[in-house]
Length: 200
Image (tube, rainbow, N blue to C red):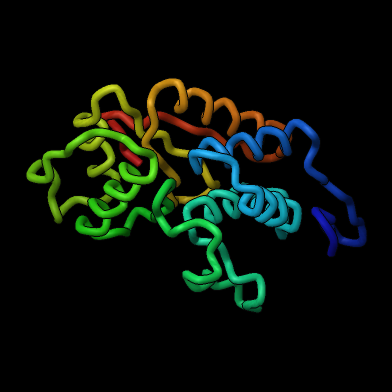
C-alpha cells in the first residue's frame, strides 16, 4: 500500500493530503515545537500519508509531536526507543490516556512544557490529589494558570493530547488543527480549551 491508498473490498482509492492540509500541518508542527523542524514535519507528513486508514493519520501526528512516535521497523508498531524519537518525549506536547500518568509524572510533564515553551507560571501542588486522575488535574491546572491556556486536540480516542499556550498561539493552533482535519470524512476532529469544568 502506498501513500493513503485504502482497500475497501476490491476497491482501492487514494486520499492524498491536499496543499491546505500540508501547509496547516507544517505551521501546526512549528507552533507546537516553538519553531520549524524540517525532519519532524516530514515525519508527521509521512505518518499521516502512510496511515492504515483515513482516521489514524491525525493520532500518529500528535504522537510524533509528543515524542511517542512508533518504531517504523517494529512489525508490532510499538513506540520507538528514546534515541529514535525526533522530539524529546513529553516536552512541548503531552499525550496521555486517562489512566496515566501518575501525579509526579504529570508535574514533570508540566514543568517540561514550561521550560520548552519558555513560560512563566507556578502551580500550587497542594491543590492536586493522588486520588484523582489527569482529568481533575487538568481542570485544576486551568484554574491556576493566568493568561495561559491548556489546549487539547482530539486524536479520535480517549487519550489527551495537550499543551499550554498564550491566547494568541492557542487560537492559532486550534485554527490550524481545524484546517488540517477539515477534509477528513466520517469523523470530525475537534480541539478545545480545558477549563475548570473539564470532564474528559
